[in-house]
Image 1 (spheres, rainbow, N blue to C red):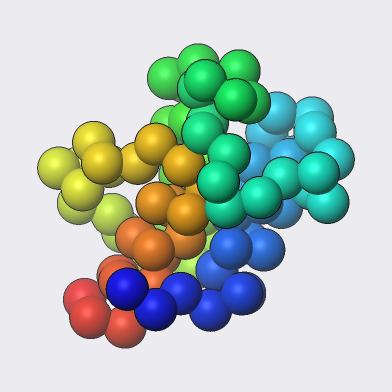
Image 2 (cartoon, rainbow, N blue to C red; image 1 turned 90 degrees about the horizontal axis):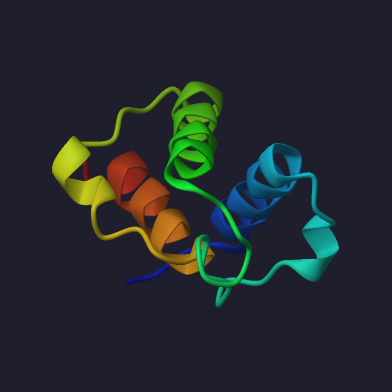
Amino acid sequence: MRVRESETKLVCRVTAEVLDADPDALSERNRFIEDLGADSLELFEILTRIEEICHISFERAALERIRTIKDAAELVWEVEHIG
């Protein structure tokens, strides 16, 4: 799936805000729970903020596949461009 850099930067920025991390230290390979120490509530907050910023809505079933920043960026791209 093709993901623009803007989706990845958005996910990194929101993740950094929620987890109080340096956005420049994050990469698309980072796993939310294992690498960044996010709990399920923080991951939910990250995804909810992205929905609000982008004016999109994720299907709850799709959220189960989110493990990494790249996964989240791909989902943003998919919802914005495919529906």
